[in-house]
Structures are given as C-alpha cells and as structure tokens.
Length: 249
Ligand code: NAD
Image (cartoon, rainbow, N blue to C red; front, side):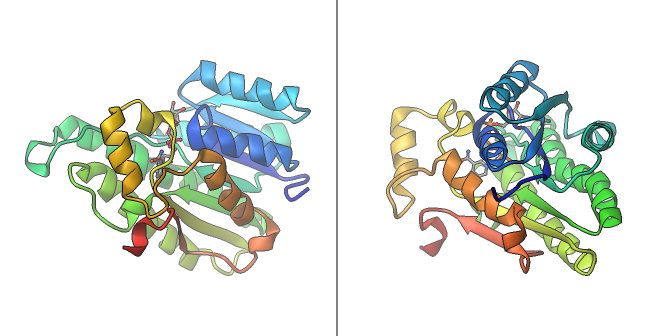
C-alpha cells in the first residue's frame, strides 16, 4: 500500500475532490483527518472510511480561520503522533460577475477561504513537518491558477495566489525533506460545479476540454496520491495541471 502508516490531513474532505481523496488515501493505508465546515458530510466520510476497514477522525474546522488551522494540526498530532501529508483542498466558487460589479464581500470571502486558507494551513503544517524532516503538502489550485476565466476574478486571483505560495514554499523548504506542490484540475464533476450550472452551461463547459468532458474527482485524487507518496521524491515547488487538455489550446 502506497501510504501505509502515513497520516494525512485533508481540508474540505466532506465533498467532491476532498472526499474522493480521503477515500483513496485510506484505501492506500493512510490514517485520515477529515476536516470540513459541514459536520454531517465530514462525519459521513469518516464512517465510510471506517466501514471500509480504515481509520479516520473528523474535525470541524474553517480554513479561513487561522486558529482553526492551528487547532487542526495540534489535534492531528495528539491523535496520531505525526502529520505526513496535508491536502489544502477546501474552496468555494463565488458569484459570476465582472470585476466592475463583483461584490466586495464575496471578494473577501473567496480570497479568505481559497487563498488565505491555504497560507493558514501551511503556516501550521510546515513547522511540524520540518521538525519531522519529512512531509508532503498538496495545495489545490485550478487551471484558473494559470489562466483567466471571465466573471470569476476572485477565484482566478486566489488560485494564481495558491500557485505562487506553493512556489515559495518549495523554495523555502526544499532542503528540509518537506515537499510542497500545487495541482491544477480543470472543471471536475463535483457539487461545486454541478449545482451552479444549467444543463446547457454544463455542456458548453465540457466542450472547453479537448477530451469533451469534465474530469472526475477520483481522477484528481490519483495525482494527489502520487504527490503524497514517497514515489514523488523529486517533486516540489511545482504546479501540475490535470485538465483533459484544457490548457493546451
Ligand atoms: P465541493 O464543494 O464539492 O467540496 C468543497 C468542500 O469544502 C465542501 O465539503 C465544503 O463544505 C468545504 N468547505 C467550504 N468552505 C470551507 C471552509 N472555509 N473550511 C473548511 N471547509 C470548507 O468542491 P470541489 O469541487 O470538491 O472543490 C475542492 C477544491 O478543488 C476547491 O479548492 C476547488 O476550488 C478546487 N477545484 C475544483 C474544481 C471543480 O471543477 N470542481 C476545479 C479545479 C479546482
């Protein structure tokens, strides 16, 4: 098993990509700390992992609050004695408006969860991993960490920021044994995308991908699995698109 004896913290693991990642990592032997603001979804993921014979705990935590990120790392260490892997995944979409109309409150909210949340996570994860002399952090960016997308300014700015933060972490921690990488999925079939689109909009989104479809959460989790594992021993400070050809155009 690729992640035997590893302890993995996954934020926003109650749904979508985070949930798929939690289930896949558990299947590969990791003990999982599931965090989310949605307690019902988070605890149901823990139950699913346990019913498959794995080990997991749920911590209710909001990634936009530094204290919650600190508490999550502390509790992980108390429970499992170490932290090998962190997937900073929690994120929201935000409204669809051009910059000139974009609501200020929504800008602040998207930036605080999608960008500051990743910083707060690493702020407390990195010292623990540095002490241990090993670790792998995966920051969930997006193809929109690389290119723009009309009417999504806060999301695009936050995801570009996540890519920049990841580069800095790679540079600063390169010699410590801790690896930090960002992944850029294209549009993935999760509640974040499905719930906000009409069928027509969904189909035109699919056509933006040369493969003619959206990605699936488990396809993203497979790349996370590699980055989290010791097989990715030379990977750090990098941005990995996973996009059905989206960025090739
Ligand atoms: P999702 O909505 O299915 O799941 C996100 C989870 O995060 C939810 O369970 C939600 O309760 C939780 N969450 C929201 N705000 C939180 C907070 N402040 N603190 C803790 N948890 C919080 O979304 P998803 O599609 O699985 O997205 C996961 C990540 O992947 C996000 O960062 C998103 O930007 C990124 N991403 C998604 C897509 C896509 O097309 N779905 C594409 C590229 C990147």
